[in-house]
Length: 343
Image (cartoon, rainbow, N blue to C red):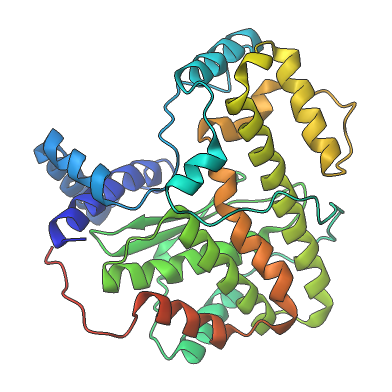
């Protein structure tokens, strides 16, 4: 991919992410300057430029637009879901993956959901320790800036990338129900680390590739930091996430492919119950609301996590952080001389 196309992509990514970041971060002079830079550049982009991005950037997700608002009443929400399905009639997600040369995904019911014991919250000191561990093992100076950590009281855990500014911000919320903040935090820290390499080497990773490597790094970090007594909790946490993502992917695949069979609210809910039962998840009799189908806001995003989570569960016993780092660097040519983009 040429430097100009990369630059266009970074402009768009910065604009989208800085808009999201503005919901949680207090405005500072630097932040406002970044925002103005992104907005100014976006205005200057032409339709032809956007077409270049679409044609040259690796595929992320199926191009499925929708105006779904999960706050709508159920009957309105169902109408909007049907509209989305009609615009993508008989969409075959598995065929789409094949045509775009994406790896196969495994939707077998090979694990079971179980409760995970609560573990202590992760402190700022432990976060600093994680970065020190990574820098020592990788021999790369990955710098963490405390000001780039944003703590909030909502259930939001996200690493926000600003490629033009070469900055990442980690938003850490609170998991008041399951108390699994520790694992969510390590995951976002690994996104932060991957972003540092993306900035340095102008890498553009698909969502699926990034989540794959983040999950592998996350597992390596967990083994480097936590005592063995916590390993089983981590693995069960990961199994639960994997099953949840399989349920969502299986449900969406059938819904989009055979949408004519699921026009009514209850037909969609029944399909979802069948997916729950397939993966031996209880609650088949529980009330299912269409507003719970949050994943339909970004169709098939759930599938982006599958291969990374599946591989970690298969190889966790033998995972070593240094091996994962070596594999990642070899895959993307990290360390080799590359032409930098001038900002």
